Amino acid sequence: MRRTTLGKSGLDVSRIAFGTWQLGGDWGSFDEDAAVQAIQHARELGVNFFDTAQAYGFGKSEALLGRALRDELKRDRDNLVIATKGGINPGSDRPRDARRDWLRKGVEESLRHLALDHIDLYQVHWPDPDTPADETASALQELVDQGKIRHVGVSNYDTEQLAAFDRTRPVETLQPPYHLFRRAIEDDPLPYCREHNIGVLVYSPLGSGLLTGALTPHTTFEPGDWRAKSGAFQGANLQKNLEVVEQLKNLAAEKGATVSQLAIAWTLHQPGVHVAIVGARRARNIEDSVAAADLDLTRDDLARIEEITSRGVQVEGASPEGVA
Image (cartoon, rainbow, N blue to C red):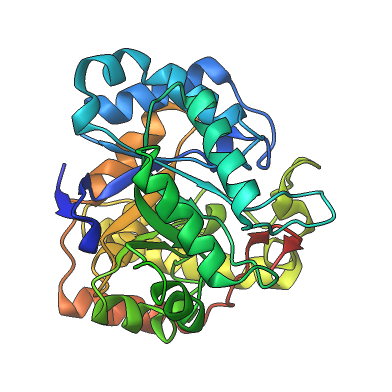
């Protein structure tokens, strides 16, 4: 498994991170034992970077991750990088909440759910327009000073928001959405991250399932799955992007790869992207994703991917308020 230094954080991490959004209930039901096996198998394959969040089932995902890695954490804690996120409260009157007290409470709860004495990387899940950046940044620095978290990052921030945070406390990492059907970060804030050596770990590199090759025009989603309410996964929009995926499948086959491996490898070939976060509910799924880190794409490959995906429809994703 290829590894990289995650920007100014200095963290030595696998280029594939195991993401656990799918283990919090927002993607429908799943088998917990199979999920534990998938996490453990990812570790066997060389993944040392695991990402979760307070909001993924309000502790359910964190607790499952902690349980799956319990023996490994006792045996080799220094070689594992555990990242989580806080600062949102979905379903409340204030779904984005990066105030000092809520962040402190979130860190304490995450430590308890994960059964850890410190968190390697703590990230503000979404920008909170109602809380001054200096309050959020200084609160997280206090938690660093107390040894409860080691490194500070943010998620879903733009350049202006990053700069505001930076004025109080440097942002070490950014976690934005990025895939072949969602490319806005290329203009903002990826250039800022490259300039300031901010480690970038992208989420949803498989387009929330679109780039797995598993969806069809007739795919339906469980009521608890946020995609059931997204226009990108219905009707003509879905049909158009699935046509693009079919063409990408052909290119992937020429490389001896799957379309999901091609999509993940594409993100890792983009300047400034350090890590792709990939979720899995079963052990066999993570094997495909881990192999993508070793897939080399030529300039011609990248040009062909650009040409094929130019005919696709840009896709949005989930937010604390719904779909955005």
